[in-house]
Image (cartoon, rainbow, N blue to C red):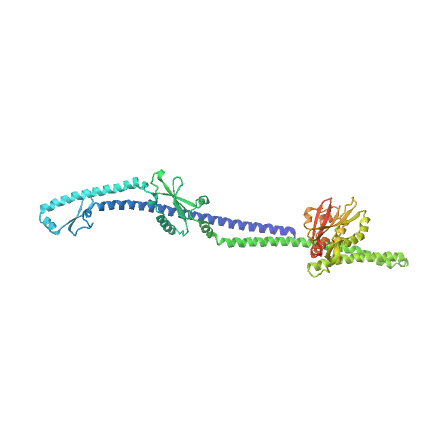
Length: 510
């Protein structure tokens, strides 16, 4: 698949997922807002109903107070035991000239009533007298109602708020009204005055909730004078959970969408990685073809020369051709061995033959062998083996190949116009460790390539020179071998300044 096709599919899927997430988020926000608005409206209705009920209670209080006063001054209070005597009576019903209908009961002994009924003049006089009494009672009751209203207006705000709005009564009314509006939530409340001073509150009330958009305020007894007004403040500790419960079913949907997004991103990354790996393998095959082509051509040419009778008669030419065949065969074998070793280590099938090795001596032998190759290019190779204790447990063959690979890379990526300066050093570190460094003054490595130089088949852009061939396996092999021997490796480099590879290995404990 072409890279442009992968990018096109990636962009389309990204837009689709982004649109889906935006729609889900907008839907959740609308659900939360609608739920919150419904909650606020229900609470406001409940608080308004509570204040109405408190006002009705206060009116009832004053009415009961006046009724008690009337009863205390009635005829029944004239008796010691407070009970009315057993009396008979005469009940009259009539309508006044203003249209008021009323009943009048005359209570007295039966004998007196009969006597009064036997005398028409007496009955008429008593009837007129009762009319006057009824008129007086009507006027009195009318004045009494006016007095009650006047008391409510003038005296109600003077009563202590604890009496007018008892905390138990408020809680009962709040529970009832909230349940009627479908809100079965725990709540806390307080009664405060006009200056915000808390007159009384429930044990769980917290003034800090005022800034959380969760404090509802309702005026108690709105008809009170402004300086004497009090307010009921209510908040709900579990409001957030109540609001979020409306989108509880959306959370799994959002989670599944997010999981799909992660899987999609991972799939795209794998696609690009596979694309990159395919390109690396193609480069590897091309490089391997060039690497194998040179020694095969040399061996083929040497074989053709052996068919020449003149060459066969010259011992010197035979020796030279033999040397060329041997060198090219070794070169071919080394490349094949490198590929096989990397393949075996990737499958964890290769095993190291660890043995105690003096790193100073092993590096010294490598330097002696490699120095001729460096001097052939007009360079210089120095060794500063200053480590006092250099005993390490390594596979000697692979350890030698690691150092050889680092030196060979330095020669490959040298500067064309500056003599090559190569240096190998060893020194002791704390915690029984040995440090080996291989530094050069070559062309260096870019910062973006430093993180990937130990990957298989990866070759930095500065290596695409016509005289530098390879599989991109050298440094991958070095990294794999060092880590297999319980060591670590890192690299420091600057463009046009040089590169330094640092290997740290554990020393053998005495």
